[in-house]
Length: 132
Image 1 (cartoon, rainbow, N blue to C red):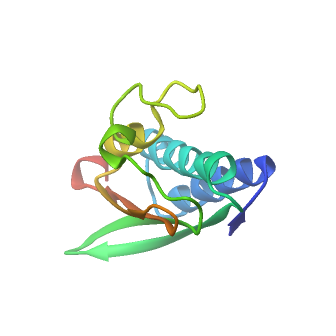
Image 2 (cartoon, rainbow, N blue to C red; image 1 turned 60 degrees about the vertical axis):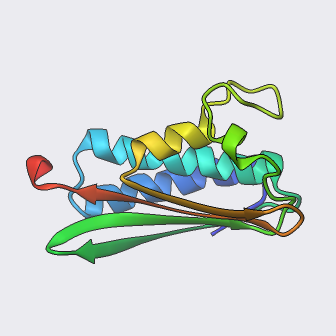
């Protein structure tokens, strides 16, 4: 889905919550996914020049089911990725918990960014046996 306005953040969060429930995620893990989607969508609205896209989809590996979030924009990129992944770092006066929080909440987290060319983040949450 395209994420260009604040109301898209809530819509993306609702879609993530629904997909997690459909895949059998317990409420706490569904909340991890929804919170991560909300944080990534917020970054698109407040940091990317023209917003971007969030894609959600089920994934499978070795008998496990998961949710994959792909967040992509053609914005300014992240000039100091190391700092952006540290708790408390913010370029817009926020709390600085967004990207580090997503990295903690999700099981897999990959980010590619190039200043002036945009950012692509892929994060996955797996439904482990302990939750089934």
